[in-house]
Length: 149
Image 1: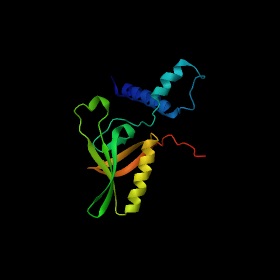
Image 2: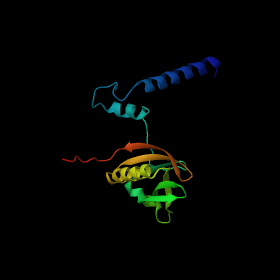
Image 3: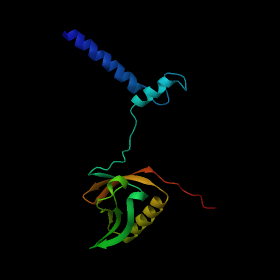
Protein backbone atom coordinates (compact mmCIF):
# COMPACT_ATOMS: atom_id res chain seq x y z
CA UNK A 1 0.00 0.00 0.00
CA UNK A 2 1.17 3.47 -0.73
CA UNK A 3 1.56 6.26 1.76
CA UNK A 4 -1.55 8.05 0.50
CA UNK A 5 -3.78 4.98 1.04
CA UNK A 6 -2.53 4.68 4.64
CA UNK A 7 -3.27 8.35 5.12
CA UNK A 8 -6.80 7.95 3.74
CA UNK A 9 -7.40 4.95 5.98
CA UNK A 10 -6.10 6.87 8.99
CA UNK A 11 -8.35 9.85 8.23
CA UNK A 12 -11.34 7.55 7.79
CA UNK A 13 -10.85 5.94 11.22
CA UNK A 14 -10.12 9.30 12.83
CA UNK A 15 -13.42 10.64 11.47
CA UNK A 16 -15.29 7.63 12.88
CA UNK A 17 -13.68 8.02 16.30
CA UNK A 18 -14.41 11.75 16.41
CA UNK A 19 -18.03 11.10 15.44
CA UNK A 20 -18.43 8.54 18.21
CA UNK A 21 -16.90 10.81 20.85
CA UNK A 22 -19.02 13.75 19.72
CA UNK A 23 -22.30 11.92 20.36
CA UNK A 24 -23.46 12.22 23.95
CA UNK A 25 -26.00 9.96 25.62
CA UNK A 26 -28.63 12.71 25.42
CA UNK A 27 -28.19 13.20 21.66
CA UNK A 28 -28.71 9.85 20.00
CA UNK A 29 -28.88 10.00 16.20
CA UNK A 30 -31.90 7.75 15.72
CA UNK A 31 -35.45 8.10 17.11
CA UNK A 32 -36.10 6.88 20.64
CA UNK A 33 -36.67 3.14 20.74
CA UNK A 34 -34.61 2.43 17.61
CA UNK A 35 -32.39 -0.62 18.06
CA UNK A 36 -29.37 1.11 16.47
CA UNK A 37 -29.17 3.50 19.45
CA UNK A 38 -28.29 0.56 21.70
CA UNK A 39 -25.11 -0.17 19.77
CA UNK A 40 -24.08 3.46 19.49
CA UNK A 41 -24.71 4.10 23.20
CA UNK A 42 -22.38 1.24 24.12
CA UNK A 43 -19.58 2.85 22.08
CA UNK A 44 -19.91 6.21 23.85
CA UNK A 45 -17.31 6.61 26.60
CA UNK A 46 -18.88 6.73 30.05
CA UNK A 47 -17.39 7.10 33.52
CA UNK A 48 -16.98 3.68 35.02
CA UNK A 49 -16.65 2.70 38.64
CA UNK A 50 -15.05 -0.68 38.98
CA UNK A 51 -16.09 -2.90 41.84
CA UNK A 52 -12.81 -4.76 41.45
CA UNK A 53 -10.24 -3.69 44.00
CA UNK A 54 -6.68 -2.83 43.10
CA UNK A 55 -3.64 -2.46 45.32
CA UNK A 56 -4.20 1.28 45.68
CA UNK A 57 -7.99 1.61 45.50
CA UNK A 58 -10.70 -0.23 47.39
CA UNK A 59 -14.48 -0.12 47.17
CA UNK A 60 -16.08 0.21 50.61
CA UNK A 61 -19.66 -0.83 51.29
CA UNK A 62 -21.52 -2.58 54.08
CA UNK A 63 -21.00 -6.14 52.85
CA UNK A 64 -17.23 -5.71 52.75
CA UNK A 65 -16.85 -4.04 56.16
CA UNK A 66 -17.07 -6.52 59.02
CA UNK A 67 -16.26 -4.08 61.86
CA UNK A 68 -15.88 -0.35 62.35
CA UNK A 69 -13.38 0.44 65.11
CA UNK A 70 -12.36 3.68 66.84
CA UNK A 71 -8.87 3.23 68.26
CA UNK A 72 -5.92 5.20 69.61
CA UNK A 73 -2.38 4.46 68.45
CA UNK A 74 0.33 6.50 70.18
CA UNK A 75 -0.81 10.15 69.86
CA UNK A 76 -3.15 9.60 66.90
CA UNK A 77 -6.74 8.44 66.65
CA UNK A 78 -7.85 6.03 63.95
CA UNK A 79 -11.18 5.05 62.49
CA UNK A 80 -10.43 1.54 61.27
CA UNK A 81 -12.51 -0.44 58.81
CA UNK A 82 -11.96 -4.19 59.04
CA UNK A 83 -12.50 -5.30 55.46
CA UNK A 84 -13.25 -8.78 54.18
CA UNK A 85 -13.19 -10.30 50.73
CA UNK A 86 -16.44 -10.51 48.79
CA UNK A 87 -18.22 -13.81 48.23
CA UNK A 88 -16.43 -15.80 45.53
CA UNK A 89 -13.02 -14.94 46.98
CA UNK A 90 -13.72 -15.16 50.71
CA UNK A 91 -13.30 -18.92 51.20
CA UNK A 92 -9.59 -18.61 51.94
CA UNK A 93 -9.40 -14.84 51.79
CA UNK A 94 -7.77 -12.74 54.47
CA UNK A 95 -9.34 -9.85 56.30
CA UNK A 96 -7.38 -6.61 56.30
CA UNK A 97 -7.70 -3.24 58.07
CA UNK A 98 -7.71 0.17 56.42
CA UNK A 99 -8.00 3.35 58.43
CA UNK A 100 -8.52 7.11 58.53
CA UNK A 101 -6.05 8.86 60.84
CA UNK A 102 -6.71 12.01 62.89
CA UNK A 103 -4.80 13.97 65.52
CA UNK A 104 -7.99 15.19 67.19
CA UNK A 105 -10.37 12.77 68.96
CA UNK A 106 -13.45 14.87 68.12
CA UNK A 107 -12.74 14.67 64.38
CA UNK A 108 -12.21 10.91 64.64
CA UNK A 109 -15.48 10.48 66.54
CA UNK A 110 -17.39 12.57 63.96
CA UNK A 111 -15.90 10.45 61.15
CA UNK A 112 -16.82 7.26 63.02
CA UNK A 113 -20.45 8.37 63.45
CA UNK A 114 -20.65 9.55 59.82
CA UNK A 115 -19.22 6.26 58.50
CA UNK A 116 -21.54 4.21 60.69
CA UNK A 117 -24.60 6.05 59.35
CA UNK A 118 -23.22 5.99 55.79
CA UNK A 119 -22.59 2.25 55.78
CA UNK A 120 -25.90 1.50 57.53
CA UNK A 121 -27.69 3.42 54.75
CA UNK A 122 -26.01 1.17 52.13
CA UNK A 123 -23.60 3.84 50.95
CA UNK A 124 -20.74 2.98 48.59
CA UNK A 125 -17.43 4.82 48.38
CA UNK A 126 -14.10 4.36 46.66
CA UNK A 127 -10.99 4.98 48.77
CA UNK A 128 -7.37 5.45 47.76
CA UNK A 129 -4.93 3.88 50.15
CA UNK A 130 -1.23 4.13 50.88
CA UNK A 131 -0.37 0.94 52.72
CA UNK A 132 -3.34 0.76 55.09
CA UNK A 133 -3.85 4.52 55.45
CA UNK A 134 -6.80 5.97 53.52
CA UNK A 135 -5.56 9.07 51.70
CA UNK A 136 -8.64 9.99 49.65
CA UNK A 137 -12.31 9.03 49.45
CA UNK A 138 -14.93 9.44 46.75
CA UNK A 139 -18.64 8.82 47.36
CA UNK A 140 -20.11 6.68 44.57
CA UNK A 141 -23.57 6.22 46.09
CA UNK A 142 -24.66 8.25 49.13
CA UNK A 143 -27.04 5.59 50.42
CA UNK A 144 -30.72 5.61 51.21
CA UNK A 145 -31.47 8.52 53.52
CA UNK A 146 -34.71 8.23 55.47
CA UNK A 147 -36.64 11.39 56.22
CA UNK A 148 -37.12 12.05 59.91
CA UNK A 149 -40.52 13.60 60.68
